[in-house]
Length: 454
Image 1: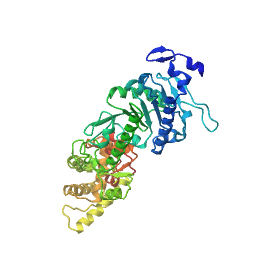
Image 2 (image 1 turned 60 degrees about the horizontal axis):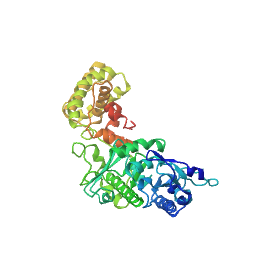
Image 3 (image 1 turned 180 degrees about the horizontal axis):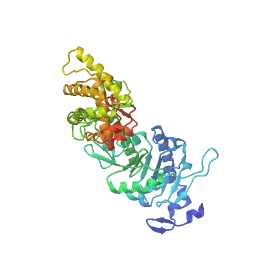
Image 4 (image 1 turned 45 degrees about the vertical axis):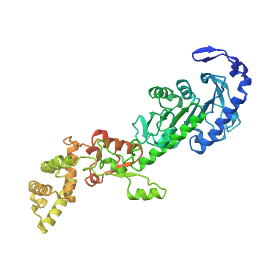
């Protein structure tokens, strides 16, 4: 170890001989010891918060020394793959400003793993070099993970008009806090370049979120980094809770989430809290959304599409559809259902109802009678099962043959993406009744987000 300590190491792009800070006396001194103890204490505290459980997460700090410029101060880092709440001073690594290991912990007996410096080291060094940070915290807090999943395609987390924003360096209550989000990778070190790009692209940020993973937070010193980490986690938790209530955390008023065109009542209405949700919330519980039930007409799709496209298509195509599918069991069932409905209508004196002859009368006569009755039913806008069944089958054929293509409100794909990412299933009862699969009804950009069993 002594030979290694006497060797030159890189600093600020130049090669310099080890100075007094790399001497064994300095490494064993009170300043380094205090920094090691501090990290162990903080890890125990962060463990209770859920930030560093399962050996995840990490902390690093500069060894503060007024006689040494911050860029030249030594760095203390926690090890990798250890129980963070059980760490002690002797488990820490000491690094030079360039990242060379100057002091490493001794191996421990089984079942402890061989010592290894944190996998976060390359990312920590980016924060030190690019922001002149004094300490960096990497948290796996569940809030920092979930908040990146609400919108799986967002590259930023934004929030404003929250008191705890004041705890973030350079921000006030009225400011909009923007935190960049980078995509996760299989190995921690593979995040280094994307984190550096985010730091460069967001000069005001003191944190970078990693989707489905956690967050990196830095500050001028350990107190600043810790304070900001606590504020970030508070804000993430607030955003998640506001989202559950159907409130928009990114706007000054934090009002109800609205669609892209500012109109409530479409897909995003599913986020609005119901009376049951409010009661559950008051009782300290939150109902878990396992499935969202959506209507189509006026909810995902304009009413005009139904009245101006679907109904006319069904009316114009009924004869063609029946002729092409007459021998199928499905169409025969449709005709039987319509025949029974017409018999009931005739008994009740419903206008436009004409008898549908039995099958023995021949295909053409049966189809002609069905067409006449269906046209009358559509004209009267009747909401009956027999008509809906046949219409659904006609529309399905139209979608399959690319004669029909649905349109959806502009907020529908985003909402389906979000629910899909959260593992929430979406179902359309009206499609199930008509035996129409969503992949036959919706545009391609929506299909992959629907999980419906019909």
